[in-house]
Length: 441
Ligand code: DAH
Image 1 (cartoon, rainbow, N blue to C red):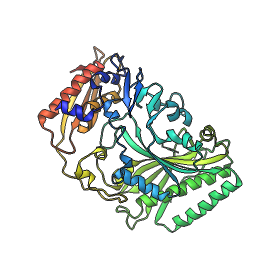
Image 2: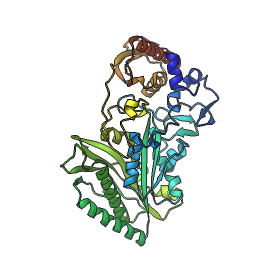
Image 3: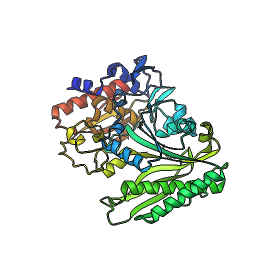
C-alpha cells in the first residue's frame, strides 16, 4: 500500500533523500543538490523546505478548469468585473523580494519564516499570496486588473486548511489628477445608484481614521474618493456573489466593513458577509501603499486593491464541507458542477474516520507544529483529514517535553481498512523519528 501511495503522491521523486529537508530544526545532510519543478531544475540549500506533497500540486491549476468550483467562482468574479483585464497562469515561483520586500513587509515579519512559507532555496519561494505580482502588473500599465493563482502556506491540517489554495487579486488605478478624480466621482455615483436599488445593508467604518490613516503623500480628498470607490466596487461584488442566494433570500444581504492592517495598504479593510446565520470573512483590501506604485514606475497614480481566497468563498457558496474535496478526482465530486453555475454540492457518503495518536519526546532543538503537519502530508497525502496536538507536558525531573498528536485518517473516496491505517501511521511514526530525531513514547 505504501508503495502505491508513494507513486500516487510522489511521482516527481526524492521522498527518501529529500525528506531530510523537512527537518528544519536539525541539519539536513541528505538533500539532493537540485529539485525539478515545472520542468526546470533548481538548486537546494539550507532553506529548502518544499515537500513532494506540495510539488505534486504545482501543475494542477484547478482554478483554470471551467467546470471546477474554483474555476466557476473565478469566472463569476471575472464576469462581475467585466472591464478588468483577467490575468492567470503566472508561475508560483517568486523571489522573497517580490513576495515580501516589494510590498513593504518588515524584515522580521513572521510570514518570511521557514516554518510559515515554502522555500525552494533562499532566493526562491512559492508565493504566499497573489499580491506578490502587484508591482509587475502595475508596471505593465494595467489600470483595472484581476489576477488568479495558486498560493502556498505551511499550515495546520483540518477541513478548512490546505497548504495550497487559490486567491484572486484585483486592483484599479486612477491618475492622481483632477481628471482622474473626476473619473472616480463618476464611477462612485454610478455604483451608489446601483447599490441604492439593491437589497443590501452595509455596516461601514470611516474611510480614514486615526487608527486607519491616509498616506502622507496622498491628498486627503483623493484618498477618501478612492477608498469610497473600493468600498462601492466590493459591495457590488458581494451582491453578485451572495445577493439573493438561499440563506439570504428575501432578507437583505448584510455586508460589514472592518478596519484592518496590511503592510502594503493604508487605509486597510476587511469585508465580512452575513450568510447562513454567520459573519464570514471574505477578503482584505485597501488603498495601495505609494511605494508599491513607485516601484512599478507609475508614481503619479493612486490605486485600490483587494485579495480574496477562492476556497473560502467556494466552500460557502457551493456548500463544500472539506477543503480536500477541491483536489478530488472522483467523478462523484467533479460531475456535480457545470461551467458558469453556482450549485449546491450534495455530499456522497462519508467513509468512517480512524484516529491514531502519536506521542513522542521533542528533541532539545525544538520542533515546529508545521514541520509535523508537512511530514504527515508528505507521508499520507490527503488521507489525513486533520491533525491536532492534543496534549503536551514537560517532565518535572528530566525537563524533556512530550507531545501527543491525534491524526484523523479518512479517505474521501473509499473505506480505509484498519490494517492500511496502521501502515500509514507506522510510516508517519518512523519518518518522524528519522527526520526530526524525536523519541517515540
Ligand atoms: N494578500 C493578502 C493576504 O493574502 C490579502 C490582501 C489584503 C490583498 C489587502 C490585497 C489587499 O490586495 O489590498 O492575506
